[in-house]
Length: 241
Image 1: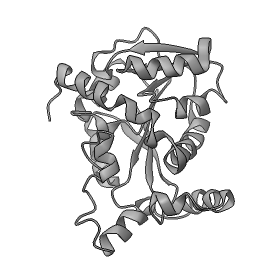
Image 2: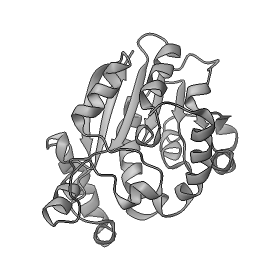
Image 3: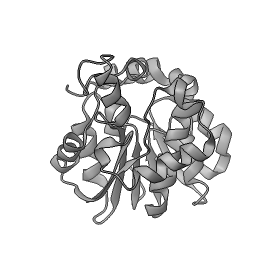
């Protein structure tokens, strides 16, 4: 699907509020925190976070860095992040496709963003065009072949693994990536994959996951690091220019 600035801006405004509601609460928020805590150890300053949402990943990044730049097409979400973190963040109100940085970023974070973009290839090409050589793009996306989606298919709840879930549709997801399709997406933009990993195992629905003790949730993260990425809830890639 080709990039249409007006249509994309309308979508951003339409779905922005969902990132302050159910999608940023409970186990969903917990999974995004876990993913951020995984990739934050790789980051080098200066850091740009593209698609900050309500600041779940931003909060984790700021535990390790004094400052981070954030980019989002939603003034509503940028205000939430600015109010939370004050002078520790510099906010840019722009779609990534229209952004021209004035900073030579060493790390760019795309945490659960590619699946909501109409034309992710265009966005990745744009980022590649302005990133300095040897800088790294860090990507996370929900995984189409995760354990809980496989279970859902086995139970007859979804007809194929690449179908966008009901929750995904509610928050504006266009697609679900598997490991191979994500590789193709980033490599087609010119990036070289230097690290890939599955992050967190989610065996059950959100309702059931909410009932698990914290030590079980932590164990599911640690276990995911020992298993093939195809079974994890999130896919992570570090991609060097």
